[in-house]
Image 1: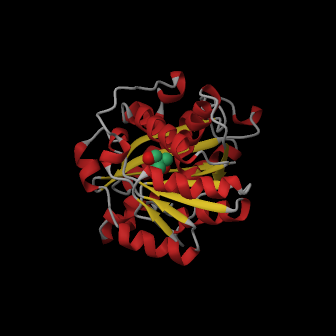
Image 2 (image 1 turned 90 degrees about the vertical axis):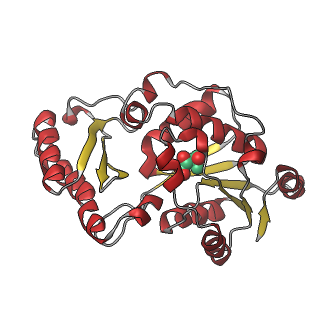
Amino acid sequence: MEVYKDITPLQHYLNEHKFHGKKIGLVPTMGALHEGHLSLVRASQSDNDVTVCSIYVNPTQFNNDQDLAKYPRTLDDDLTMLREVGCDAVFCPSDQVMYIEPSRTRLLFDRLDHIMEGKFRPGHFSGVGLVVSKLFNIVAPDRAYFGQKDLQQFVIIQQLVKDLSFNVELKRVPIIRENDGLAMSSRNRRLGKEGRGKAVILYKALTEAQKMLKVPVAIEQVKQEVRGMVEQAGVQLEYFEVIDPDTLTAVTNISEKNNVALCVAGYVDGVRLIDNVVF
Ligand code: PAF
């Protein structure tokens, strides 16, 4: 597996493959890899000739310095996992390589970033859009892979690709869960034993909500039930939204929709977790 910290040698490597007509898949990550990330790598490997995984904890998408400082960084373990799964190349740049100077470009996504993560993490999607654009320009992949756990991020990146005419096909890969249903996340490493026990309530609340909505119980009542369940378990609910997974617009009538996403965010002992189900 090739490991690149700088852009030019990575591009030489990629150009060689592109010259021979090889398809390139990009898996952008912030490291602290788990099975969820590996499923993105595997999806890329099955569609492309060459898979590049990027590992970069992007400071411009953190609106909270503490959160950035505490974000797990486990590069050696990440490289071992990627080697074992047969990833072809890793791009793990420093801040100096990614942001030669402090960035001044800010991205707005209209109503797409007014809700959920965008509402509670101001500037987050501007930073995501910026770093993903940089990665698309640096790697120029044929396809790029993102996890469904960050559903809003996926929709926003779809918009970014259309608006800026990036020539890349986006793939949304399903959430990978622990045995009890907790969505895999790099942030789970920050949970203590007690927090780990509590965290599963987010998924339980989503599955209960899904059952209730299918009855159908009214959306407002389901929202109240979810808040009750989550807070009863000692988890601080930040939001629970019922939305269209393609447009992110609020769903008001379940029976009229083919596709519904239930999205949740909450703090478990100070660790912010998100999850969703699409049905
Ligand atoms: O989903 C993530 O891990 C990050 O937001 C991404 C897409 C790698 C950009 O930093």
